[in-house]
Length: 247
Image 1 (cartoon, rainbow, N blue to C red):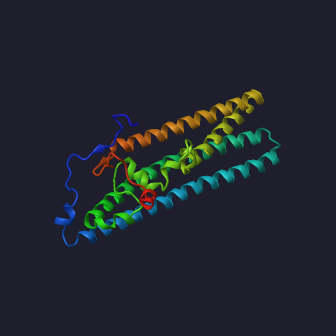
Image 2: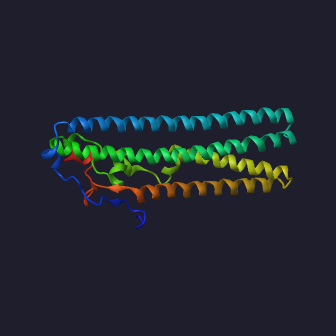
Image 3: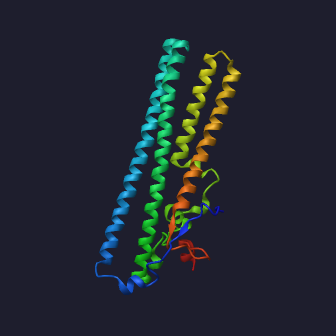
């Protein structure tokens, strides 16, 4: 249930309605819509490529840091040299993780905008050729439900931990562990004891995950608040492809 301040906004004025495109469109309307369609698809591909690249860079940096720490630990026998090296290297990896999470969240928000645009174009296509509606498996509505339907093939089978299955969530978990390891090593350097170091690391991991979750919720709420809906899903819901096949 969305709060009133985060609910999608309806368009102030509908410039089109069902069938209007089919009656009043110019001869170039379909060509223009198709061009915009391919432009949005290209934008989605660029965003996907950047997201994969960002995540790969973070994973590579984390893997390299672990290997470097292992080598330094063997050379320094987990002494002061290892602690100093770890407390210099791990914060850098943690910062890279934060930057990756922030950018992935931006990419996901951009992705939602592109999907919303594609849904609107699909709505226009179906106004031009309503008889094609049975062949579409994605949504033609541009509200939350429509965007989710077009983004996820089976939204009903999502788990409560879906946020941590997605790439930003995975990076957030790994980065939280980096933060916990940094705090734990710092506690050992201060000679607070192994138990205190483990407890401090665990608390840091939990706190970092909580901050990440709050950040994700804030991003989603901001997107929903700024979303302008022109073609909302009907009150009865949208018929799924499974329902169409069984009809």
